[in-house]
Structure formats: C-alpha cells, structure tokens
Image 1 (cartoon, rainbow, N blue to C red):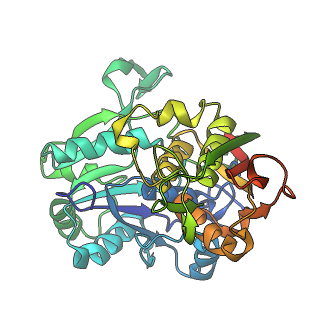
Image 2: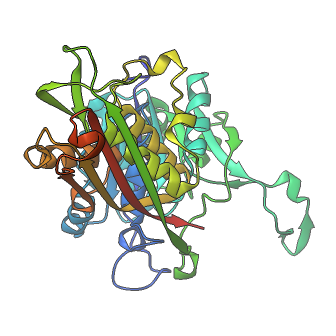
Length: 380
C-alpha cells in the first residue's frame, strides 16, 4: 500500500430495501444525479490511494443488478460483494466477518445512501485513525433550530452523525459480535455502550443521505477541451508513451514528464470541464517531482478531483495526430488503461488517430499532438 503502514478497508453498506424511497429498485441501485449510489461510493474509496480494498454489502436477490452496475470498475481492490441481513447491524457484521481474512488495521463503514461524500471527509477520518484513535465519526452541527420533547435545545451542543465512520478493525468487530441481535442506528453507538471514546471530525453538508426521492440532487452537463503537442526527442533511447501505452520502436517525445500528449490533453480537458485551470497549474514543469513522471499518475489525481467535485465522466473523445505510429493498433489497449485509471466504463472512452497528409508540424514528423473533448455530469 502507498501508506506503507496501515491496511485500510472500506465497507459500503448497501443492503437495505429503501422502503421510504419507493419504486422497484432499492435506492442504492437507482441513478441519482447522473450516477448510481453504490457505483459512486465504490469510486469514492477507489480514488484514494490509502484504501486497500472496498467491500459492498448488498441485499439478497440483487447480485446480478450489482454486477451489471459495477462491471465497468476494473480495480482489483473492489472485492466480491457480500449478502447482507434484515437489519443494518447484521449487514455490517456480515461485511466485517468477510474482511477478517484480509487482516485490516482499520475499517471505514459507509452508507451507500451517502453517495455524495467528499473525499476530504474520508481523509479526516483516516488521519484520526492513524493518530491512534479507535473510533472516529464525521459530524455536522444542525442549521435548523432543535427541539427535544417540545422544548428548545441549544443546537451548538447537538451534532448530526455521518459516515464513513472509522474504526480499529478488531475493536468494531468485537463490538458487533458482542451486541449481535441489537439494532443500533449506527456503529459508533456500539462504542458508546462500552464507553469507548469516539472522536469527532468535521463532516460536510454535501454528505447528505438519500432517503426519499426528493433527496436526489440535480446537476448540469459540462464540457472541457484539451490540447497538447510535443516534439520528438533528440535522445534516441527515449521511450514513446501515448495514452499510457509504451510504443516500441519509436523515438519518445521531449518533455519534463514522459510527454504523453494524449493523457496531457485528456487531463487538460477534465480540468477545463471542472473550471480548474490547466495541467501546468497542477503539475508545473518547474517542480522536480514531475521530472520523468508517469503521466497516468495525473489521471489518478483527476479521478480524486472528479469525486471531490461531485462529477462523473459521461464521455471522452481523444484524437492523436501523427504520421506514425498507427494509433488504431493500440487504441483498445489505450481505452482499457484510461478506463481503469479513471474507474469508468471503457464504453465511454473513444480514442482515434489522424494524419495531416504530410502538412504541418505532425506531417513533417517533428512531433505528435493530441486533442480531447470531455463531457461531465456535475451535481450542483
């Protein structure tokens, strides 16, 4: 693991039937703001490099639905789902028992209904666990006035608990085994029973829970355009990379990083659609950390940024302009790499090659250029 010390697993609780939501499918399998909650939650945790694995707990009878929705997530950290029980507590326990063989240090238990959780909330929970806390909960202070038994309550003393709630794995597993058969509203309440200290971190009002159909947020479609060009290197031993693919038998391109013009144009397009500037602002050439770096790392950065901005990719269309190599020979491999790095279905990625019929920069075989158009759906 990149963290090098702690093995952290995410347990996504998606086993409820959503009676209050209504309709044929449980809410975790219904499109919300252009994405499906259980899919979005998986992407949320897979976008974080300190997560060793993600396990979803689903209701009986919905395995085929789950498989169809998650088929585009090609990340080995996404573990086979587990069938849950009749209550949230039994579903969580089933998930924890399934994780025993992976020997986690920490577990982050998250409700699939909170599919708009920002990555910053997850990071704050994890940081407290690394500091030695056994139980961590993200909370927000209510903005509405609070009344208890029809009497006013000082709302500054009241907090609303969210997920993911983070735990020392053995501690929370022991509690669920000890209190099996009970029906706690969440997992930190089990810690309260045994007087285990629960530490609070800042939650986020964006991390709302979908309960009713009216809770589904609306969004907008956004488009970004990216372009990049690099000359061929004078170094005959420099490797050529295009859309993450190592192209044998061709001289590489000149640049601070690996000079992958395809990925650079894609990153620029994603940043453009999000209104987040350009690739040079996020990965400046003057930064020594970017020297000879693998450009696919830029895509992992974009994946986390997309999740943080409540946006998902609807379509990618990239054109690589060169006389050689022939892009069609490599396009399928390129699509697979891009889809895996961004945790999206390969069907929304299109990559094609064009020549300039001997004209211009590319036609004179001085270099290669690429342009990309990206369409996003962003929750507002």
